[in-house]
Length: 139
Ligand SMILES: CC(C)(COP(=O)(O)OP(=O)(O)OC[C@H]1O[C@@H](n2cnc3c(N)ncnc32)[C@H](O)[C@@H]1OP(=O)(O)O)[C@@H](O)C(=O)NCCC(=O)NCCS
Image 1: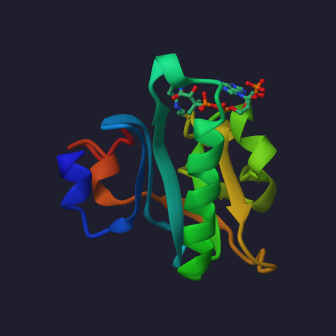
Image 2 (image 1 turned 60 degrees about the vertical axis):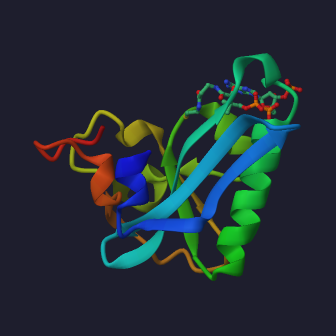
């Protein structure tokens, strides 16, 4: 997390936590990302503490995160993840010609949600620097 916090793509207002009493039970991070030259947001990590899962905490974190992202006028949010995200309107990014790299194994899991009517986004997706290891591979 420290690496992300020091990244130029880190937006403190888009790092949200869920708390019950004094306990952090979930968090979500949205950070700057590029598709081609178009700037938007990458969602992740997202996690809810095991004992609090399936209580709609994840759903609320995503709801708040997307609302804030829209408020900041970002046009899209992308992520790599499973079917969980389709209920929030995330679609396959491949459908729009968006990939991480040609033949990247995560391409089938790359998803995007557009926050307005513009769908003119395609190309390679670049997460912020702290998402890559020293060899340039996505962590
Ligand atoms: C995935 C995760 C963030 C979901 O958060 P959550 O608060 O447990 O989920 P919610 O209660 O908001 O789920 C809402 C609905 O999404 C669906 N859902 C929940 N977890 C799911 C999963 N892992 N896969 C597919 N659908 C899921 C269910 O339909 C659920 O409704 P239901 O409980 O009434 O059936 C949480 O389980 C988690 O932290 N998992 C471990 C870390 C992780 O996998 N992070 C995501 C990386 S891509």
